[in-house]
Image 1: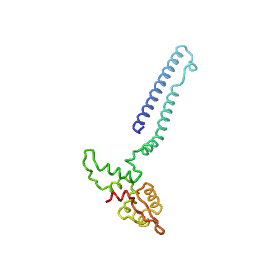
Image 2: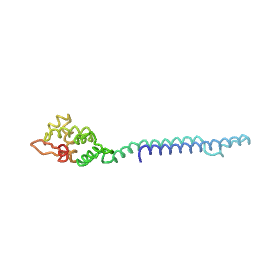
Image 3: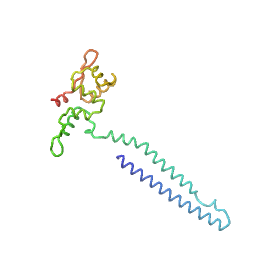
Image 4: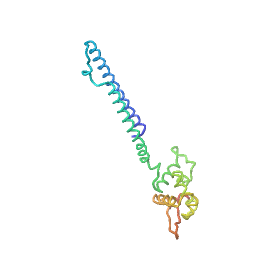
Length: 196
C-alpha cells in the first residue's frame, strides 16, 4: 500500500470515529436532557436513572482518534522505508551487469531516438550514490589506482574507502589485487567493455 492511499484510509477511519463519537455524544446529551426535564416535572432528581454522561463519549472519541492517528504517524515512516526498499531494480542496480543493462535500455527512447547520453560510463556513475561515485570514478579514469591514492582523491577516511570498495566489489563493479601492503583497484570487465 502506498503512502498516499494509507493516508486516505487512516483519514477516513479517524473521520468515521469522530462522526460515530459525535452521534453517540449527541444522543447521550439528548437522553440526559430528557431525563433532567422529566425529573424537574416530577420534582425529583433523575440523575441515578439516566445513562452515561456525554462528556465520556467526547473524551473517548478524542482518545480513540488520537490513538489511531498517533499509531499511524509512528508506522508511516516505516511504510515509506518499506516502499523505498521495494523499489524496482532499474532504480537501484545491484550488480555491474544490471547497471550496464539499465544503461543500454536508457539509451534508446520510446520513439526509437537515441538518448543524447551515449556514454555508458557516465550513466553508470549517475546511477550510483555520491560516495560510491567518488570511489568508482577515479578507478575508471585510472585503472590500477592504489587504495591509498583513492583515499587521497576521494577525501574519505581509510575505513570509508575500504568499505565502499568492498561494497562495489561485491556488486561486481570493480575488483582489487593485492600489492604489498595495499591493493590496486581495477574496474570490472563489464565496465571496461562499455568504456571502449
